[in-house]
Length: 297
Image 1 (tube, rainbow, N blue to C red):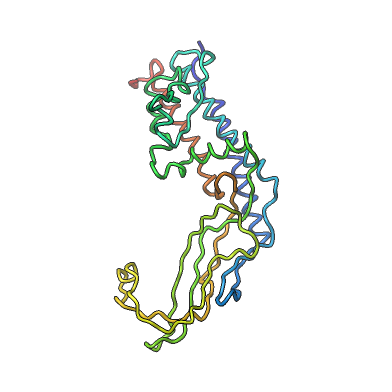
Image 2 (cartoon, one colour):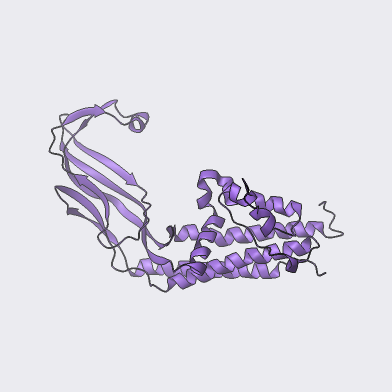
């Protein structure tokens, strides 16, 4: 039987990286060519900070994203196929594929459930299986869906089996300042709000990033928020009537793709490098197992 060869897995991972780099370059150029901004408008007895988006990304970018994700996923399956060969087994006798699981019980099986691990890794050696176990998203617990492999799985599942992703603008971060009139201390108070918006929907022109309502209440003394006290603030402060709102700095917008859940372009960018690192790790393991390598199994 031929020896394991990860050339095709590496080539697919490299192509995925090239495709992401091209998509990222288009996204960066789009943001430069269609500058966005923010403005403050009166809004139902208060003020709203809204985003101005002159144009959304081209619709056909979903195909670029899907092709990149498919190549990254195929790279992992090519890897799994070669790991069976590296174990001296025939991959054609199994339905081996690289597993990606956010829930440990779904991977190992539980309460009568079949083990997906045993089915998908049939023919792969125990040592390589343990490495694959350690790289599963479920190891991150509550953060499992942030794992690069979880991102990849979500992208490919939707692209291959459901429908397209929608490329649109999204917020990375924004900072707004709430102004108040002179309070009993004789100064103009400014309250700052910093938000990191995570929205399941694309941003559209006129989307409200932050809203401040006029309460009509007189100045009143309140307990200072604990985090502000920790930074040296007084234990009590005056809460005054809002008189306006202004952006402290421009909102940081980015291109994102929306489907089952939103993925910002930089989140997607973690996928190809992770796949390549994973392949390189197994390349070293395979090399160490070859006769004359001088390394132990």
